[in-house]
Length: 80
Image (tube, rainbow, N blue to C red; front, side):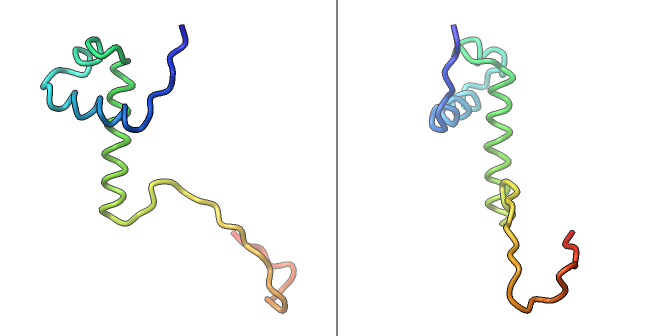
């Protein structure tokens, strides 16, 4: 049977319930019916997002499109 993908709210709820339970990841995951490695990954992602918001750095890298402007310098210039 294929598992459905947990929503953000479900992931957050599991992480909060696990932390409040005082159980190990393996014990909580067995009770909740989730993979313990997945549970630990969810907590890691949530902590990373909170840390990124506090520090002001982006959570993920983004690509920015560069466009040439008229009269904008050398035509053969390389951008790295």
